[in-house]
Length: 135
Image 1 (tube, rainbow, N blue to C red):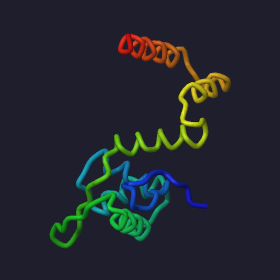
Image 2 (spheres, rainbow, N blue to C red):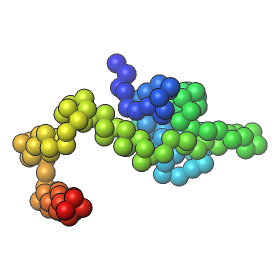
Image 3 (tube, rainbow, N blue to C red):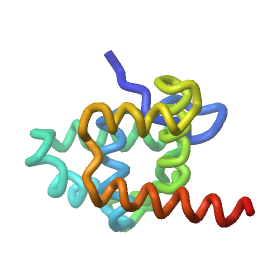
Image 4 (cartoon, rainbow, N blue to C red):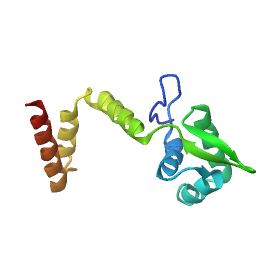
């Protein structure tokens, strides 16, 4: 089963978990060659060169990355901005699981004891800022 992550634009296909791993490498630093990407994710994911190149080709087709020739190799850089990806993913999660509402999401984590004291303090601070902005 393929996991849907996000859409680069309204016309493109979803980005899979494996493709997201490649994007994370490129978001941290780019441009990168396929060999550099493989050196970073290969050992952790147990991927071979062919896997990384296949994923890069899929991301190229989806217009999530761009390739530039550099001698005999290509250098890849992200076209999809990480902040946009996170925003779309957050909206998708809220819509799918919590009817687009944040409060049930926070309640879920609270019930599962997944909120630390630091998390709670940060949430209170954010709520205070929201109240200040609306008054």
